Length: 65
Image (cartoon, rainbow, N blue to C red; front, side, top):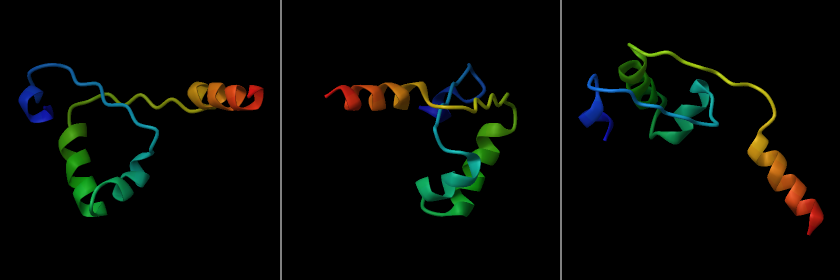
C-alpha cells in the first residue's frame, strides 16, 4: 500500500512506539533503519508526548467494573 502511494499523495503513519523501539517490530534494527530512511526522507514528523487518552479511558473503565 505504501509503495503504491509513495510520492503520489499523503500518508499518515501513527504509532505508540518511538523510532528506537521499531527494531523490535521488524526482524532487525537494520531493516527498521532502512524502512525509516525510505519513509522519512521527505516528511514532517509530529511527535506527541504525554499521557495516552486511550489508556486513560481503559484504566477508568477497568476501575468501574
